[in-house]
Image 1 (tube, rainbow, N blue to C red):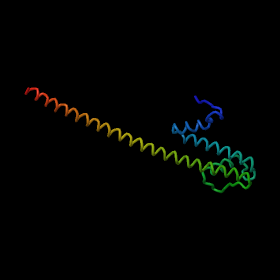
Image 2: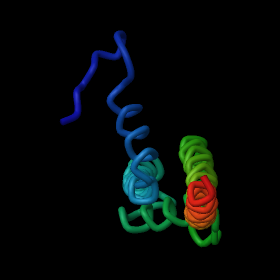
Image 3: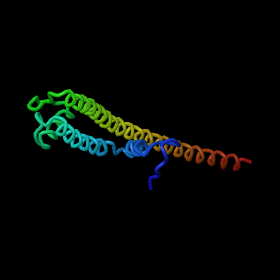
Image 4: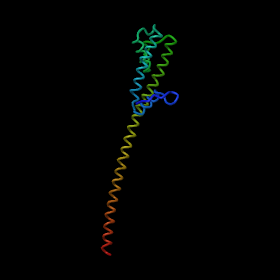
Length: 154
């Protein structure tokens, strides 16, 4: 179970959750949930502060998701200063999400290749060990044969 440490004494709950997500390779669902939440929150906030440009919650969410995705169609844009501040924040989070997503996918590819390389190395080592065992058995047979011949002469 997760322990919630006081902020002053250790890691925050959010930091702990983030580190667990990264360690368990569950970053994508975590990032998708955070991005969806930011889209809903950003849409709600921009609807509250800029009713003229965003008359409905749906318009606000549409704009927030398009902005988070760094697409920016331009069909709906904020014209107030606070609307633009929210838009700037949404852009930063969108670019950050794409960077994390790219890093996660790249990391997964690299991990898969490294795992395959480790498996191949393990197979080679096993084959080498088996070959060494076979050679040692052959050598022992030869030594036993030599010792038997030497004992027969004595």
